[in-house]
Amino acid sequence: MLVGAARADAIQPVELVWSAPPECPVREEVLGRVAELLDSGFVPAAHVVAEATVSRTAEGAFHLELQTRAGELVDVRTLDAVTCGSLAKAAAVVIAVALSSAKPEQTEDVSVGAPPVRNAPRSGAQPRDPRLSRAELPATKPPTVSWRAGAAGATNAGTLPNAIAGVALTTSLDIEWLRLGALGALYVPRHVTFSVPVESTLRFDVRTLSAYACALFRWRRAQVGPCAEAGGMFVHVEGVGLSNARAADITMPTAAGGAVLNVELSSRVRAFFYPNVTSPLVAQPVGVRTSRGDVTLNDLSSPSFRGLLGVDVRLW
Image (cartoon, rainbow, N blue to C red; front, side, top):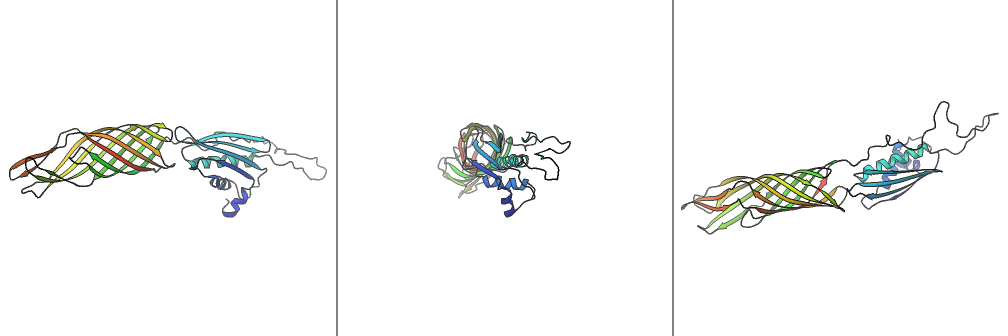
């Protein structure tokens, strides 16, 4: 295999014109990959001109139209890949095949008394079809599955008398237009003071854990679609400055409905906004025990609005 400077020498017979969006600047990667595919002793038979035009499809994949010209032989191929790197590898294979399949310049047998022989095939050998069959191409169909992980800022308004904020971690499995994922959120502890029937201050520690499913529809460089979610809310309540106050741990199953909006920042990173309305499935009142008896302070059965804004990264 060729490495370093030798690699550049091997790819001199290739003239590559690469026209692509800013997120796919892989011209040098294609040339380097061509050199890797060729043996160190390979001598190209002809000069090859390759013209590549890359665009984005409606599904967000990369679409390549590649024309290779070696003398009078012209070959045009179209390839699709979910990443620019995959597209570069496929383009390199096509160019390498064009180099190895190009017809050499006319040569003559210089042996004494022998008639000139021009491009004669070896005995019993069939001329090679210079076009690469689709069976020989690497699979360039965009993968239908990708795994992502990310983080987001989270707000929740309605669960408590005052809105709470926190951080959420998300992970998802995207299967074509369907997204299956899970997220967990940890909110900053909130102190809430109640004045009726007695003045009481409670500290709320709220956590949530849920699984969700979304249907995605592409709109230009964005994706949008409805989401359904099911999970649980975990609340630790502790009285502050109350005599005989008792702490309580409350667990409530929840269901949510909303929508997600994704915007692609690059081939691997995207921003997302996920608002929804969350409703506890079982009413759980919050109370404290004081010297005047048990007092119910808040009912966590009311729906709340939750919003997540963050980014995620495609792992594979």
